[in-house]
Length: 483
Image 1 (cartoon, rainbow, N blue to C red):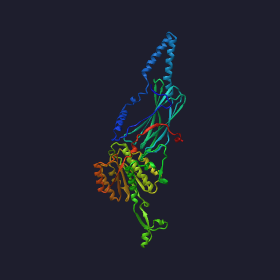
Image 2 (image 1 turned 120 degrees about the horizontal axis):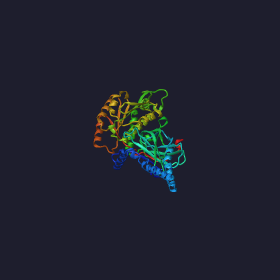
Image 3 (image 1 turned 90 degrees about the vertical axis):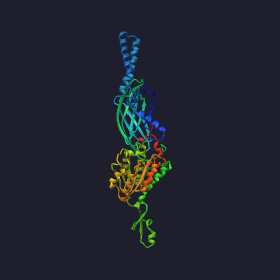
Image 4 (image 1 turned 60 degrees about the vertical axis):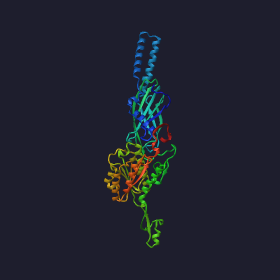
């Protein structure tokens, strides 16, 4: 039978490809199993929902024979068999055909933009022109992560049995969502009879999409309100700043914050002007008879921070979560720089695609625009980020800080050349390499020593453990989220 249960909402099943961990045997086994499911032909995957033509052939032949018997003999048994077979034809054949006429669907999303590791409630409403009873309806939805190099999908499957209602609504929630653009193309609606003889499929066009912004996902209670850090237009979600679950993650956050602030370390001096705060006066200099001097910290001067994200495919070896973590750490640096009022230049990959955030004008809208662009990034570049920065001399203003986020720890020579070029321009370069290794290998340590001997500061950043959680769908949601 096509519909094994008859509840109002029977099941919501999510299917997605497992994460590429490389260190968990169970994850590898699950990945191979799901890989086989993904490669299965669509006709075989949807074998549970198909019209049983062989059974209909037998029913048609039996009905024709019973009609002939009614004409020839006209007995009660012949009439009874004709009536039973006619009812089967009406209930199992005609009813699904009528129910599949003029279907329409509406999909409502509780939000259009959410954060990495967050959840999204979705309400799907199916409308029927004719409220035909004695049918079941199966709905299949699928969203594709276009920012994933492996085009990962999340599928939702629901089955329910409306009776007389013209409109049917069900809620479901997507959890542990990953960075990227997630479009919905269409919904596949299958209508069948309770005897499992007929299944009619329709594709309903109800396009929509949502964006998952980059960040460092962390385990949190589903009902915990989002906490904002910072003030004014520089307030950023705590998900971008994150709560570290390990010492390496905390050390990485401190290194990024120190790198953003480093351009403003050490005060400079200028003659006192009317309106300057007395707290900034250099009293020691005044006591020595050198006049009134005002301390000017570099954070009060225009500070330019260049954040570069490496999108070279070879650097990540088709590991989506490694690239997501790299973009998440870059998002943390962007949030810190905008909070301090630094001018920010964002370099997205090897194509020299840039975005600028002027000094002291980092509105929340500007930061959101950069995060939106980072959410659409794909690790599919073929060039070299170091060569791209070398060619983009207009990006390197004298005195600026260049923060490079990558997973390419083997490209030591190109990073060394970039450091030399940055030094010629009067810039400071810091390299942040994201890795899954808890302990650097011998080759990684040798690269670290070689880069530091060339004046390149290198920091190893981990992939947060919370980013290994798999996306999944669950039935239910809060109605107030759509108000």
